[in-house]
Image (tube, rainbow, N blue to C red; front, top):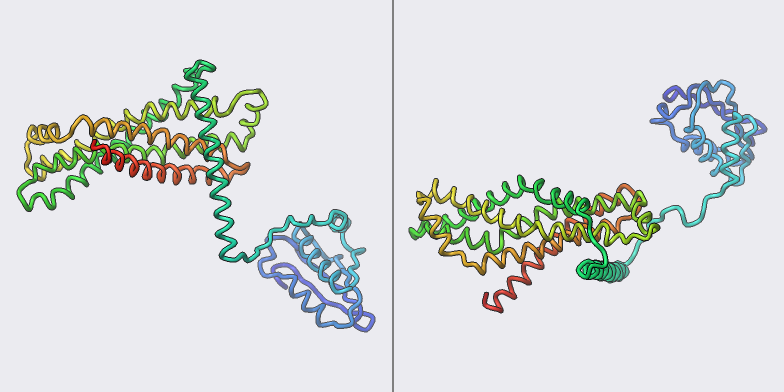
Length: 379
């Protein structure tokens, strides 16, 4: 007895015929230890076996598990020229097995794990990279054309579409931007104070935090936060629409998905990001001020005056410009991965993950390029 299933073996005609007598409950819940390999071993032990038949008179309950069990035995018998006699099977089981024989398995459907060489993998990745770069350039071109049409009044964006996106990107992001920016300001102040206190120059913590936050870190941290929050949301939204065939419906109605879905999101995030950057700058400076006042015994006016004297207007505008660029990059990355999403639930998660990675890499690369250009221009 194996979990309420009993299989007895009976041979007739000088071990040329094998009768399997199955009794008990043949249910999925009872198959934890049952394996058709045990029956195969019994069949292999009879070298002169001609046919296999079944006696299921004492079978009490059964479900789809018996179909899998019998199908494995049938396939083995067919491959070893052994007759598989199914006349004594229940009518339902016999009909399903006949249906399986009538509809053969399609070739090429079953996945095969083929070992590929190292150079083949490199070639595949190079082809995928080229295809991905082409798709990205095509998408950027479509967005550029759409913005050109918008600027010249060829079409308009409704406020009912734009305003909810702006509200989602702005108000909802304030708590996390406040927390992260303040903590970054605290960290910068702590790191700077460790060295500056040794020389009695702790007042320059204000300069360090002010320049770092306003010129670079405020924009970068706001961009990274929006990449993880809003960029992933854009990818998930458009990916879900792709799965539900809503984007195909827009194309059928003659509505451009880029103009209706992508442009409002890019425009909303490019408007909001400079504002979030200024807010992140303020919270970062406040975080540094907390360290300066409570741990370095600096006075509020001293810290304020040092920050005002150290930070130039050029640094402020560089940070604002970077945040605008980051907003465009995050929105483009999220919308691109969303539009490229395949038609499955798992693909939506993959699109969101890919959007975050693409956006953060783009932010880092853009920061490096802008920093080098500012250095070359002497700004």
